[in-house]
Length: 358
Image: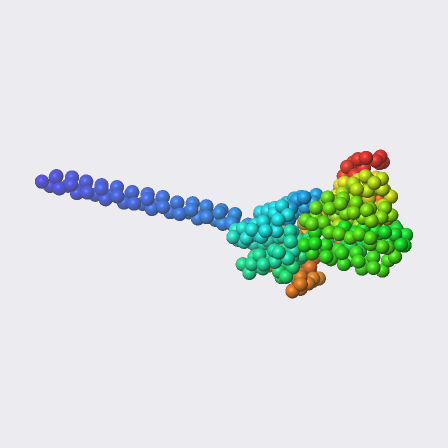
């Protein structure tokens, strides 16, 4: 009887021990699991804590935009930020949709090269109201009160181009002006700079037009339209080098290339080649590398609520917005080696592809 009860008590005790051991093992497992979960969450938090920047491009039709993109993305990445690049292919409605998407993705900053500087105003204001840092890159977004506008001085670009015409063409000469997209506010500013110089000169503007969506073929048609008015053309001012390429084509077909002063901007490779060949007089070099690098650095700083070195402002039509203004440089045959090649913007063997060099 006693032996039976002893064995029963022993069996019950063993069951209790087994249950206790199992309980402690389960508790240890749960604790370890919780610790692992904390570590995983922390690691996920590191990813989520990375600064997220939306970068919205008008298009990549213009050669330089791909360079801007690559420098911006690499700089931002080096600073610990991730960049979501969107391309609107020249469609402002598509760009609005893409900015809406970036707002929904809760970007920390949105940087925009505007397809239409007025049409995207409301969606940029919406982004700012959502607590997102808004930056207008190279083209000022109108009436949007962005946190930063970073660009080259477009009025100065226009003055530089016009001064080239004045310096190279005798008084009374005939010139053609071909500006870019009328919905690009930079074009408005550049045209203001051009007119400021030409209105005080003795040159005659016989034909002036805009290139919708910066379509380069418009420059080809413009030169031919001007030639239909008179074959006595001394200069063609183009809003960028892409337009200048088509103006050059029209001049070439009329055996006038190299005889007419031709200007552009962006220092595209083809334009640099024409300059050393003598068929384009000058291009305006906009320090793209510095522009893109600074834009990425300032985007990160603004998200981190750090100070940026900006002392100028510009009116967007309604508000005075902070303006980071970089220098524009006139590039001619005389300084192309120093500015473009020695500066690493283009390679010498590429620029001098069709002409001998030492």
